[in-house]
Image (tube, rainbow, N blue to C red; front, side, top):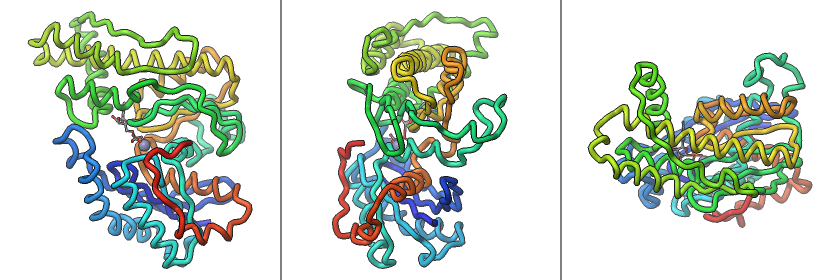
Length: 366
Ligand code: KG4
Ligand code: ZN
């Protein structure tokens, strides 16, 4: 079947056409119009500005997605839209576009949770030999339930136990800032560009090479809640620790090696806590697969270190990560999640009437 996905929960206007058959998902087009430059000067996403940009971009993005996929509206079998959580002014644009198309084209419509989309990014191009190249490409690599998914994005940090498709149990989450939010705030403290994740990661990797040249600086940041008995997280104190560290030596902020040292230590602290809690949760819940999801899953250190630790400590557990291009917000993941929702629905005829009732929900629960 052919599915149109639409995503406007935050600052990316995205549309994608996918072909989903027997659990195999092919991406026919995946268009993302990013508003990063617009929001960068404010240091974060401004909801009303985001909505204006979505309004400007939604039709061109939809048009491009259709053209690239070489599909016509008549060939579309389902429309899947992220209807929350997110910024209401932004969400309304995508949801309204999806409802309008559903009504005019007379197509079924499904609402998808944004984080569910991130989780299902792992099901795109599922049969691959990475991240464990030793294993032959075979069914052995297919995601097996129960799955433990570490969700790390700008708005969420959660450990989600998924016993079967679409069945989510949140077993741990952040008590304050999300991991991506911490990256963004630390970048701001250090005067780096927005969004902070890629900037902090780039500085962190530069530090490694400086160490080899012998310029070592000792910066020790805490590992918040690493020894707590639950599976929750806290990153707000870590960000404050970075702030205090910079206040000790404000003159060092002009020193690139110092910035790199802080970024390296901060990133390692986040990785240590995320990995430690994931392994602890896996020891208790014994998943067959561990997955990463959300914008921070693009972080190479997190991807690699989690993979290495799983291999060392949990031998047979499969480890799955989304391809880098599907880590950040996109609509292919929304279409993919829509496919699995559609498969589960008994009375699909009802989906034709969803344009009347589907609403946007800023606080939609997984
Ligand atoms: O999932 P996402 O694209 O949007 C939300 O749903 O929030 O995640 C965005 C977050 C931002 O906080 C961004 O700084 C972070 O993901 N991020 C990264 C990296 N790339 C994006 N964090 C760490 N390392 C990265 N390479
Ligand atoms: Zn996201």
